[in-house]
Image (cartoon, rainbow, N blue to C red; front, side, top):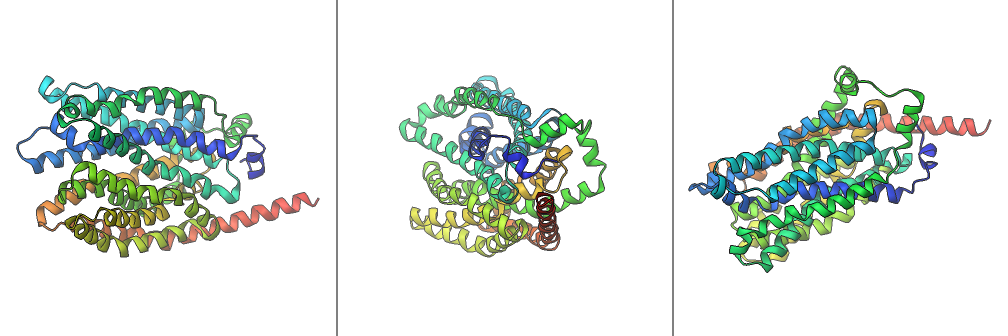
Length: 453
């Protein structure tokens, strides 16, 4: 396995490694989340129903369906990343995401082709899920295998902000179009623009990624003939790998999924569907919160390099649980008084705590697996955790609100979902932190002894 000095001798500046990885990942999340920003419009055009509650639920369910496809992408592309290279794989996933996104922008609506419209939309959402399921793990491992040992948390944490930034771009584009177009024009053709403009951006991002170099760790394994022939089998048949997957699923990844999709995705549905806030206004409030939190990801990533991944995440989860209900209750009061700055400030509170939970996650999971199957293990842990805790959280939360008549029932579900994540992060994650610090100290002592000979 390549050491940190070997990674630094690869001659590629870390800023360039992180920036080029983030460009493509932000674009993929933008493509994936444009659907979120346009859920109300797409539901009206592709899933028409006289029952508005049913129509809204179907629209949110289509968001969740894409999450079921993400493990398929992981099963296809993560082993590919471990076999043929990190770089090649995330070029393929970027192109796949771009093509499917542009295709959504070209779809005929229900009024034109009837039932085939929602079928086509659902099919393309599944393809998007497959692409995203293969993208993120390759990008994280690419950055991690270039990063110095004592900066892995900070370097990989930047990638965690790409989901929020991608959603921010999606909200900005959709809001700008809604502000400049009348409703008739927007429903006729304006909604297609956020999807179609991906085409030239994907072309540029693909060109940038093709110019990237492979990681020093992967090149060393390839030269030494130590690449795995079947990373998926190696992972699924390994008891230690399954322990790592389960700890990540029910701990770090579960905490990340619940906090992210409650604070960002469900928050948007809560504002629009529960509190009946006008879509453009809700987009602007959410964007304000995201802007405040986005720069803090590398800060919390650096904190995790110093005090431990699990300790940082545990503190974040605990604070999020304490803050969530008062924040949602405060948002309801602020909306009633049209205090939009207060709404953005309260959203920012949860977004900051979400950043604290999310930032250490990539390094935490990637460090649990050997380099021969690192992307595969990372992808499985992330996607299984996403399905269990995140993908259908908005749908479940909205359903609870509709069943109980309690506008805050959805956030109650999120708080309960985080409790097992809190316990697993504390009891299992902290032990992994201690083992990681011991391993790093041992490697440092070994390097020091070799240098003095």
